[in-house]
Length: 308
Image (cartoon, rainbow, N blue to C red):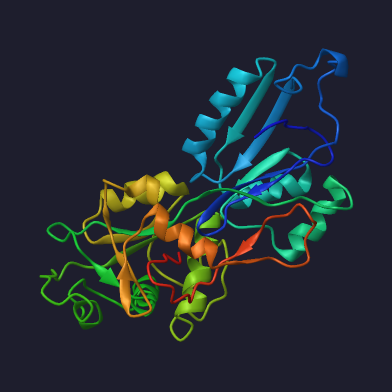
């Protein structure tokens, strides 16, 4: 990130199912009052406070970015509250934050609404980093688990009662699966991670997942729920047989992570696999010239791609 400008035309970064992003709104002029003649070859100095709200999945990365930015701009303060993607997008639209982290790009309606605060070009979505969503489970004795989209959808719809259910066993020959109760755990808050996860289910398992993609979990579905990434991870960690969806960086090394069927093979979650899915995506139409929103192909059959 080079010069950050605060005001009516700042950038937003959004995080798409595999790509974390940031959202911002501000003016074309920096808030500092340093004259142009005092700028150095390193770029203009930035002063003031930049307030951001958004994705809890982006929290750790934001802490690192804030530290680096502060080191280069001692007169500036960046505040970020990881209250969830939905809260971040709402804050951009009502003008209470200059940027937001979101795991999903602004909808067409949100983009149109953003013009009230950001000017005629509206807010822009800028992918910040690729962040695949893991299907993470707590199943003592099981370290290697394979699932397809249909089975994942059935699990989170409450249609699979135990881990040795025939639908899971058929995908995992040779694996001893216990009769432990399956406990799906979803986000209780408006979440970009939920938006991306349900987008995958609605596209790749439409015959099972009949709800529309949304950042808010369907109220008709039963199961455990918790607020934020940390909340669902803790719930699963404390509950044998539980399963959730969460940013890979939050569960790697802590919980089991399922391989997902893509085409005729199963793909392990990784940065390279997520990047392949992003490469197979397409730009979102109808946005400003500087907008970098990407629509992922959730039904991709590209070998080695991870579509969640």
